[in-house]
Image 1 (tube, rainbow, N blue to C red):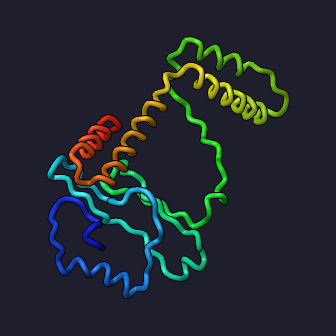
Image 2: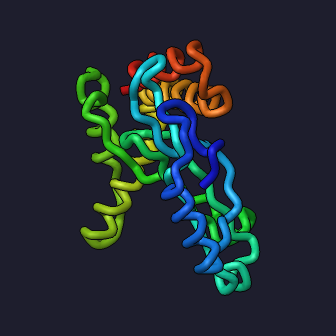
Image 3: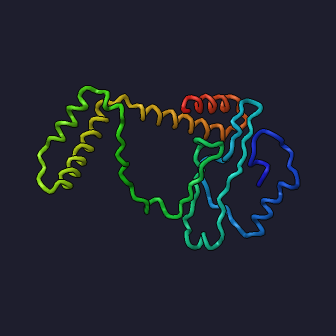
Length: 196
């Protein structure tokens, strides 16, 4: 909507670029306050061919802001797409309740010699009740034991992936603040390559 909503590429401001902000004003829309990445699109190029723009927006009308006065948007670092994901929050963060992460079975566990011992030991546990109760109780006990097994024995590949993701997101944030920096561009591209 403004000249500073882009970095790289054609620096001319053409009259047709005023059409979008004029439409937003005529529709009486307001931008939802945001945090995160400013330039929501990146062309994926290196050096002088890098172009970044704020192409993605979240707008609301007065009804939205009346109903949800703490409405806020977050522009996430790019992940799969060349566009940033946008997260619209309509309630206060305090209203959000932490949920337990779902259980995920990792095939890599089966490669350990002691895996089958853990499973067979737990599965042979005596549980009284009807067959369905016995099954679900053993599954619950096994899930708890496998989570402990995971924390104790895995090589933390998930942590390494998470660290690479954080490094890439940090590099994107640095590039977002320094869009003309060659070093920032190189860092972002190399971090993306490590993560992908």
